Length: 180
Image (cartoon, rainbow, N blue to C red; front, side):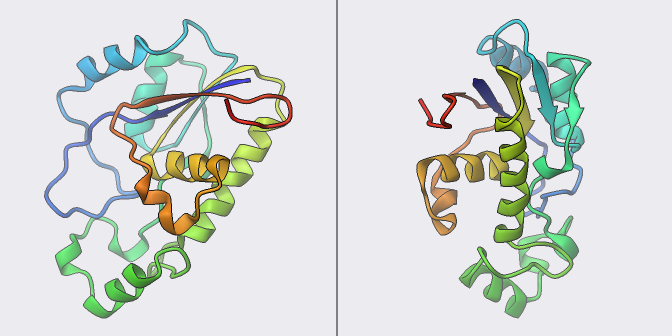
């Protein structure tokens, strides 16, 4: 099984903006980034999955119009913090989360453990499918969690896995789920 993990292209962000599920526009470099991405992809896929976020579906529809959105591929839910900036969040709540972002639930949102559970639920379903060539258009956080799982990296260290905007990571998964 060949799986292409594709991070969405560069969003247009104001400094310090907190966005996970918050819809943000893409920069005007989308066309150039799209071409670079397409140059790293095969012509056809058995299945293409996308986060329902617009920044992902805009890219997925350039790969194929026949893509499947799956909400398990959404970025971390920052709940009440979505659309705010880091300097406006309650300091005590922010410090609690910063000290243990793996387990602490963002007010109105989710913890990294909860996110990991949903991402790995998608991953397990994917591995049991019959598709052999798959594209997944998603977010940096989702890709980090998949790679952390495959590499046995602790969730607390997942942010050490760097994933650039528009990055394509090709995985070859054998029948016994080993990564190549």
